[in-house]
Every structure is written in structure tokens, then in C-alpha cells.
Image (cartoon, rainbow, N blue to C red; front, side, top):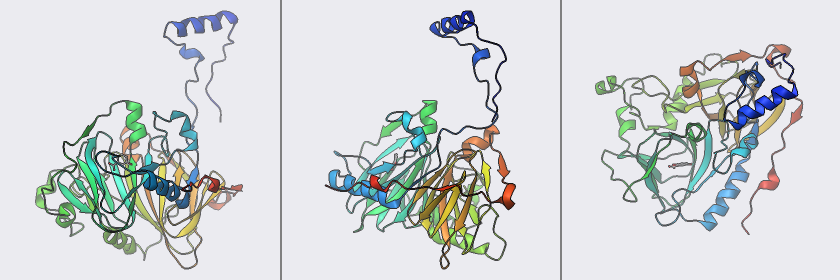
Length: 379
Ligand code: GTQ
């Protein structure tokens, strides 16, 4: 794609001048690429297999305990190969704005309480018996649940069960890191007190589309946990209608007191791809991190086929053609995903375009080979 460039020739004299400006902490706008005609993502389409991540977490489990005096969180985060240059301190996310990780909490462990200006959400992958306490409310973690920790809320996690509990964390860390505007604080005790009835928000919103009258006044997170059964019910409710051509049956998690995204900086969705679903391609400015909650299929991103199955993660960068396909003849697929729409839309950045060639389907040019040699084994 073309870039807007000046037609001026750079003589040795001008090049000297540009260097002179740089030496004096100034720059020649006329010699810069003023703007590219369309977004140029630094992140690349990429996929992490469940086994790669769990292998790394197993090693972390063998080496590290969670709790005061050791580590605060046992989480392995996903680095997009295109963002690697920002590591270790610049936060190379799964996309240019989104940090995504898988966290493991063993029976009896407490992940100590802290708060930060980055905004977090969790999607519970597997295991029972853990819960999270967010600003005095304890939310049980059950598979398929979506739980939020908005910025500057105290939060700690505990596993009172007898199996390891795994969940996906997603935060706006690369974004807040680029803004260099972050604060972090440890709670004085390991755990904060539980000050409300367990599962408070979930109980207050048990009715689904009605809200307690006091919530006419908006608050950041009136509903802390969105249970899988209610999400599934909403998706099932769409069954008798035609699926969306790009996303199947899809819902997004919202704050019931505002109607906006449940987490003000990181959007989240759950989509159901029915059996035989073959989505059409489109692209948009927002980037997405997908987690395959259930099922198997593939997503074509910019002509490359990424095969996925339960537990895998994949990253969709800015302005990347993509289409989703469920390849199972017997099972529906459920994709949980997070996105950066909440930080793009308010500033007018979002755009969307449908792929019009070839009846809306990309030509598959190659198949992505996951780096299975990367699976970390415990020595
Ligand atoms: O569980 O509080 O993956 O603060 C990254 C930062 C998890 C957490 C992460 C966090 C947490």
C-alpha cells in the first residue's frame, strides 16, 4: 500500500540539516512518513497451543509457590512474536494493546491482595474451588465464568478446593505501559476482608435483564461475575435466528448499569459457532485475543489457516482479514475473546470492512505450524 511521501530530494546539505535537528532534539516533519494509508500492525497473527502454555505452567508449579513471601501470581503470559522487541520491560502483549495470560492456583494457595491502574478480567478455564475477592466481594470461579477486576480495585485469589484451577487473565497492560501512567499497591495484609455476601453482584442481577433500582446510578462493576449458565442461555436464545455471517452467535459482556463494556478498557465476548458453521471474512481496527473454550475448528487470518482446539489461544492483530470455521461434525465451538474496542471506539478509531472477493472467503495460502518444540518439559 502506498505511503504519503514528499517528492523533495534529500541533498547532502539537507541530510546534514536533519542530523543537526536530531542532535538538538528536534525533527523534520517533511522527512517523516506522515501517515500510512492503512494500519500497519506490529503484532502478527499467532496461535499458542494449550499444551505449550500448560507445559510452562507445570514447570512454574514445580519451581514456585504462590503466597506472601514467594510470588504473587503464577501466570504465564503470551508474547506476540511481533511485539517481542518490547520485552522484557515494555510489555510485548498478545496484541499491541492486550496482555493475556494463563494463571494457575493450586489447592491451599492464596494469591495476595493488590490493586493497580491496569484493568483486569478473567475467564475461568477449568477446575473448581477457587474464588476471587474484589473490593470486599467474594466471587466463586467456575469454568466458563467471566469475572472482572476494574482498575484500582483490591483483588486477591484463593483456592479452597482440591484441584488446580486455571484461568485466562486479560489486562490492558501494553496500553497503560505505553501511557506510562500506571500505579500499583500491595494490600497491607495477604487477603482483604470479605465485606459483602458471597457472590453479591451475581445475586443482585439474578434476573438477567432487570436491575436493582439503586443501579440506575452507574457504577464501574455492579456485576462482578457473569456465570457460564447465563451466557450460554443468551447464546441458546439466538439459536432460532440466522447466525452473524462473521461471528456466528455472539454476545458481549456488559455493565448492566451503563450498557457499556463490563470492563471499561477491555471488551469481552463469547461466540458460539454452530456445527457446520463457515464464517465469512472481514477485518476491523480492534485487535482480539481468542481462547477456545470448547470445540475445534480453524480461523483463516490473512490467508493463513490456524487450526485450533479446546484450550488454545490465538491473536488477531489490527486490520487483519479473518474468518472462523467449526470443523467438528458433532460439537459446537465456543470462542471466548477479548478486545480493545473500549479504548478505540470513544476516539473514533474503529472501522470494519467485509471481504468481498471469492464470495467472502479468503484463499488459504498456508497452514500455521504451532511451535510444539517449545513445549517446556519438567527436567
Ligand atoms: O491476578 O491480579 O496475569 O495483577 C497480571 C496481573 C494477573 C492478577 C495477571 C495481575 C494479575
